[in-house]
Image (cartoon, rainbow, N blue to C red; front, side, top):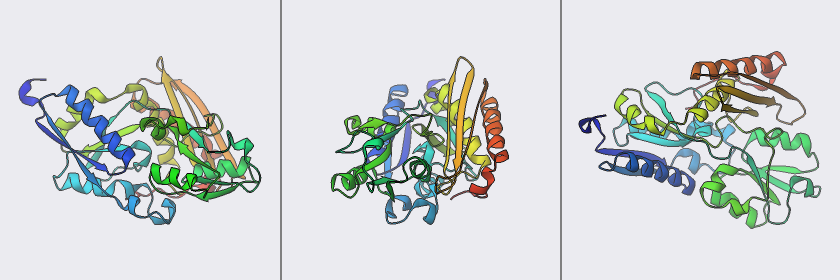
Length: 317
């Protein structure tokens, strides 16, 4: 790439939560290493998803609440790219936008966080467990019917504060966020992937841009991580086929190594009493191959009756 084609200024749109800003700063630092002469700035913003904390996401508009304002900033020319936790990005991108880069994944597991107990199994009957995810809620209700599962919204610090104040005996969080913020010491136990299969794209960072800015996609190309890109492409295909949103208790997790991809997925009823599971593997050498495997798992789940728990797919924006 000739020096005349290198970026001179880039503005990253980001939510203002501590974790979101860590992610934006991480991308900024990566870009500065690639393009030392480039002025990389961060535009911090508050989204509707950050403002509405007293209702479940599934009741107020879904994942798009965390990205709409950032997309508006790009459309208006105030930002060039937006950094997201990829699991918060709707499965269908709005017209004019694209997922230009997927960075290397952090730990995708769910984490059990408690000040007084070391595992879910130790919690006494009637203990209150907080989670923001219908997926986690369905599994917890299935495995621990004696526990009380309550909604838990807010950024990472807010959620931990609610635990520390005694409102919950335990909470379930994504391990990735705790690790990124140097708070892995808060994790009492990691939940096994085989049972607590993560949400599609959990732990991965995605960078969104306008579709008509091909130069930016080219500049971001060195940050792409192929194993993560293939894995999340398959996972997001499962979710796309099943109308994946905050309203569907759905999980999908894949790993890619030596041109082979392994994937597992489930869809559950909200009460956890019915769970459809699927898993498979295939040779994967492209995004299309990864999506093909995701489609196979999605069709398997639908054949098991998962359609009862899914909703027609909307843009979520």
